[in-house]
Length: 180
Image 1 (cartoon, rainbow, N blue to C red):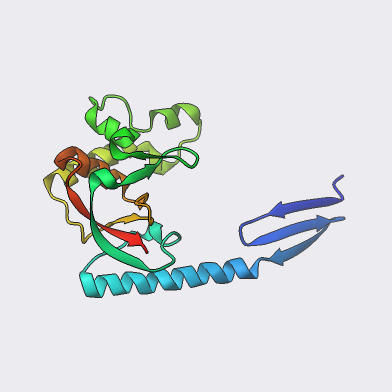
Image 2: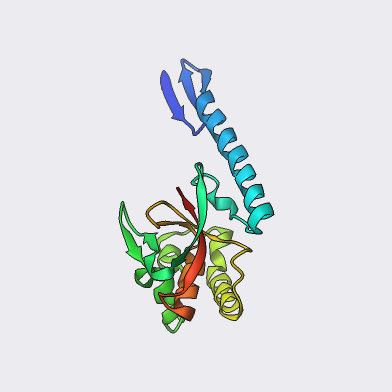
């Protein structure tokens, strides 16, 4: 019989002590998340009204400070790959997959390693091919820009950057939202 059990969650701690449950909320973390979401919504609205640029929803947690809109050549962008490592776009698995014969599934390692495959990963190859085809036809940077950190490491937009690199090469300049 467990006399004491601790469950650590993102926003709270749950302690089970002799069968009774005690919950301690992390209010500072909850307040921080609310502040980040409010700041991101304001940033999104500002960029939409002033520059007609839309930010991806996934970037809200990373773009918490001031940002700037700049054009950067694709060869200067870096992609996180591994623990505290970055690599250029041509060394990513997305770019390598785009340059292969595409017979091998895009998430083949993921599918082999896991018995349960989330619904979002089942049709990943089809979605990646659709994205590649749509970007090969026409890319409108105002629909969804690429988000980068101060050192040009991408936060969001790695698939778009890989397709654009394949289509235009490393000297092609893309509009990015970069942390200051």
